[in-house]
Image (cartoon, rainbow, N blue to C red; front, side, top):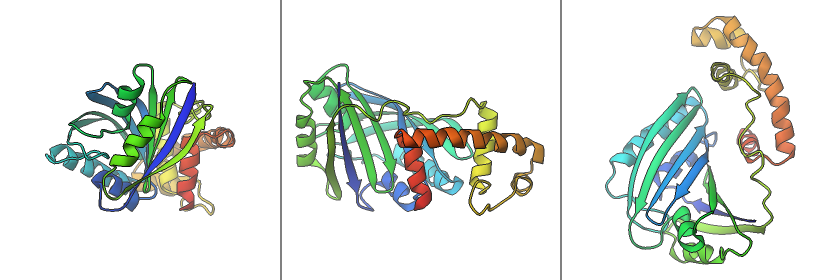
Length: 253
């Protein structure tokens, strides 16, 4: 198998959803699952970020679904619908279904058209960049996908080839939750949001709990467990986990 990686960069003002990522450097999204035929694409995306960024993200999704003049990266008309399956203080899980008209279509459609069955796609959105990776057979003609995209991108979009070679980023793609139950993960997200793990620390456990109107003990245990998760995340970063790496880059912005 070979991995084909490339990035599409968006100028501000050419895509409503990407504008939200541009305006909020702390916002990050990745595909959890992506399936496409030559007619339709279905995908699950996890978006993470501060509450105000996710509020704008939610509002943008609602607006896009009502829009009747959507265009894909290659200029095709889009019929798009979505549903938020899970909502947490600093994350969303979003299902979407998308069909595109005639012309140069988006990456998963091109992969299905040129490479057939058995192709895996994943994507990451952060800042101005929409990064794609395609995992395909060694003899797959991935160059056709790149050339069709390069020749048909809408104005304000640019394409950069990264590499074609051995898969390096599929292992450990999902961030390690450290075995924490969902409720503890939600509480841990609050500690991160209020700056409990910042250096210097922006808020104590007690201050964070008071701001949310919850008992200090409710936040203390997940906060302590978060240190264990942080250690595991450090190991994931050293081995190239793209989720942890992107979030680390976001913290530096």
